[in-house]
View (spheres, rainbow, N blue to C red):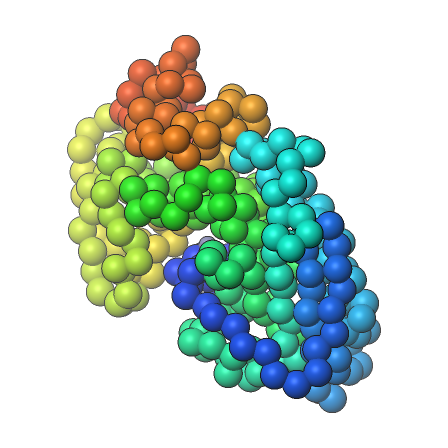
Length: 297
Ligand SMILES: [Zn+2]
């Protein structure tokens, strides 16, 4: 759960990083990525074989290419497109330790990694918890998604964060289990609320926020949530909305949905244009999603 929360919080800083390299760096090139890595690790990490710089960088490159194929394919890039090749390759920077990483930019002290949309880069450090399984796919998904649909503010954060969390394959079952529990306790945020709420403004984790909800019987209700709980609920639900679309209707339809968003449609217009045989508007989208949660186990 701690790892999940950390990943959830990482979402806030996905576009704030900048990167300055100092000292000797090594590089390793793949088809879509270049990994720049610090040549040595601090003594404290040297006993950990997994953090041998060369091995770690090559593992990161291998997994990054694998994640890229899966994410780009599902979002809508053609397999043979030239996107992200040669001089357009994304860059991954691996610092020797947390301190050097933190000094490289304005990164929150708790963060385990960040992505920069404009510079198409991901930064982290040796020993970062869950980097390969969690942060790497999460941040690559943000970069690919934003490269495809653009940086427009009209795209809701839940969609961006939902796609990024969908890419973290190993968390899907766990997240769906938590969302189902929230559903059974009548504590889901409404989709309408998620569309309007700018979750980045929730910065006081102990403040209490009052949000609307809908019970399983269809009655309106209210939730009293701390800032922490609200952010958690929002991210978990964001992930489950994207799982629902991809799991229920398939990757091809999801890439059509992303293409409609890229071409300027709102989420509601894109849902209607792609899933029109099943869903006519956002309230029906929410109903079907809740049904999907109920049927999941
Ligand atoms: Zn994120």
